[in-house]
Length: 270
Image (cartoon, rainbow, N blue to C red; front, side, top):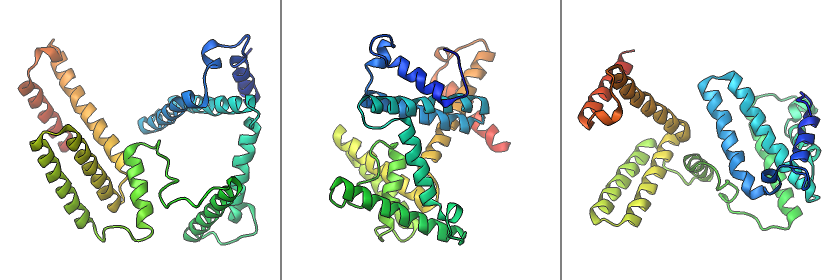
């Protein structure tokens, strides 16, 4: 079997890998549940390639993510649920339905009007889906996926609640809440109860995510930037020591901190 630009070849390869008699033993024993973590991981690797500006890597990571879609579709087909064509049909139907200003007679292309229409169509779709499934009306926050990264989910939870007026009126009030949660972390630490400490740190992180939202800042992206900064400055410690023929284990905390501060100052002077 040869590589190809045709999606049909990828579908055929996945089917071959899942063949109970001649396929790959690892692929055959996978389920929706076991593959789901890999799907999330591949989505994050796509985002990482974009953040790094590596377009060649982006191509490869998008392929890995596409494989996840094909993998899930193959398992669904084996269970008689749907196939890859059904996935494509579902998303093309959704895109056409949600863009009447492009594919229909609607001529109003004002961005705000388009956003309102998008929300109305999505709400109608959710109502239809609930009616089809015979489910009860969900709570306002119920449809925000629990599998999202925690800071991203906190942002979506508070953003959704704010739509019905459950929100602080200005960022200063949120900052006061962050300070309050910080004090409660200190109190929990003084008491020495690890369960309470964990709970209060969670409250502090949630309040910080809410503060970011009030400044129209994505808390997930902000933390990713902080992670990158930490890695960059720590790498400066490694590189500085390496130039002296030394390693991290040869340095004490004071020396590493001094290098860190020099790196921090150099970044600010650029």
